[in-house]
Length: 263
Figure 1 (cartoon, rainbow, N blue to C red):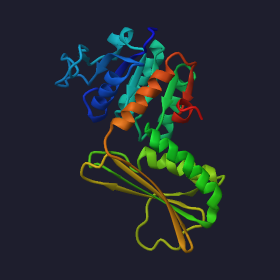
Figure 2 (figure 1 turned 90 degrees about the vertical axis):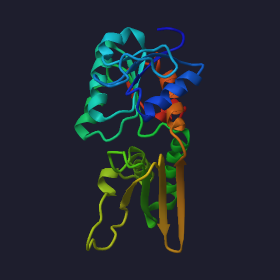
Figure 3 (figure 1 turned 135 degrees about the vertical axis):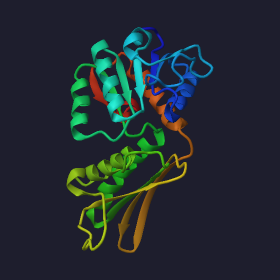
Figure 4 (figure 1 turned 45 degrees about the vertical axis):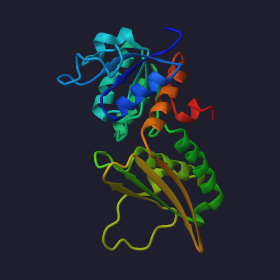
């Protein structure tokens, strides 16, 4: 491995792919080694932006050009890239969301062979919020009801967002529960009284919203809200590049942004 980890971007011309390419170019810790798009994409065979890296449709043909692959695409594409990284012993940063339980198990199995950083959100601010949410939930306890409201652009295909789920998991940890036991994802019609300890989720989709998340702790006579709003994708891209630089050379394992940030 070179002194500066070489980065490959899967889905290099998408919204996140372009942001990651910009973050790589601005970083002194990594260099761009490869860029991939699906076979038949108009960008294949052309340079990625202003770089000299040619967009390729086949990661298998370019595994010698990168050390860490960053993927923010969709579950099926991510798992295909994961198989290649396992076969070639490459590191992987996964920002894709919407995995099924079975797909998550495949990632966990792969992490026994290669190092992987996986997060529903790579923003430094969001990961700070996760710590604050766990502390707030522990302090407020189940006397406060919890609702999580998130908003994203109209092109997002999964709901609730991976970030919203991470926030729910942080709250659940704070009160000694698991999210699967307390999450409420849909309300319609005569729902009855709100169960004690439930964590509710609401998803809004529309326009070009990059990502807004608010967690409300609703008590009798007072309300505490913790909010994060993203104004562009560069905060996610910078976090992913930071994770890639940190990951290179690590032993096999499934890491989180908390590991990357040192706690």
